[in-house]
Image (cartoon, rainbow, N blue to C red; front, side):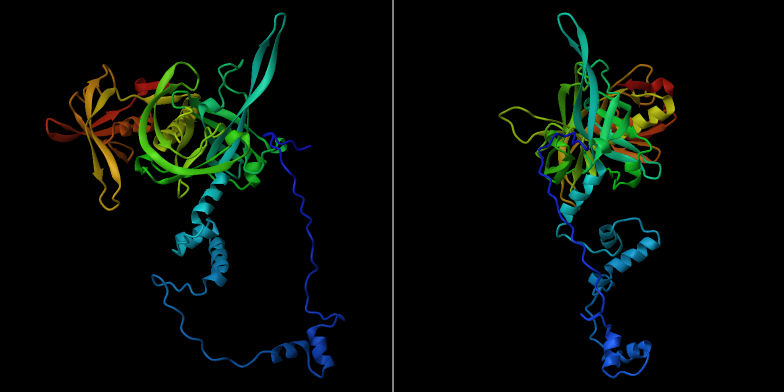
Length: 462
């Protein structure tokens, strides 16, 4: 028996498939066209009869319309499939729509957003995490089993091996009231396959209640090997534009994966919220959206209109007098946190984030707005000033109070320090052995200092 674990009430729509007979060039009495020709006086073989059907050359057709950018697309509707098939045979890996836009350079605005949203379903999973709870009576102690549902998305996929890393919220797999607070029984479900016989066991790799990010891993799954699944592509949240169209894919109300659309209403804010492990409170940097969010959306990807991940859904405002306020972990935090968790697990067999601490306290001064040249986008900017240096930290003797930080770089990756959070987010991607180049202004003079990170600079961020 196949049981729908999301407990939907559904009507099963049965569809009878009628198999039509193969159409052949025969008349009602079974004669072929050649037989009919012979019956009507044609003398010769079948090949001669076929040759007789070929007429003389016709007149040359009129010249086609001019192409676009040197390309003639006049026969596109009849030859697109053949062009795409030829490209695939030569090693092209994209879809036919990607081939049309990326290779042929044809933009199809009609329905493009709908197709992008639809395609994102292949990157999402529904998640159920089970827990054991103590049930105590006046004369007995027993246990019961319960579960929570959430959403996740594919960070990376190895289809040949059937392996995948999946991102979700930490609170999706953690329950402070359970006997074992981190779930030992986690299942993920692909889009359209939310049934017990198609559940995929997942392992907890690591996570952080501070950042409310967790990484799961699926190993050797036939459903991954044979299914339609795709890993996401990230976009830097520092490029996010207030007012741009966004959407989420999530398991809202545990009813299976669905989409909701809205706009980005705030690109960065700080909010004090309960930690994901319910151990006090933590200040999180978040983005805000008016896209509808419901229970079960937690851990889902937050996409831009082109299908790139801008963040991870984490919470919503539940005040009766407030509508349309949902909170998103920015991709610059989420992506680096995920990479750090995987790196720490592989190198240290750790389940936490291991962050290299620079050891400086900074503040934002002289905030202002600017209009980007070329795009016209309004951006918030600020001057990042060093206030304090932590004794015996990596930055001691290299950076000093009063320094104005301009940028920070590691392994060729550079981020401008025109917002305080850019530096904080960036450090999640720094590991032991890395050398960070800090470009700053001191006493009116611009300079670059190098800081190498050792094991002593690591701090566990649980």
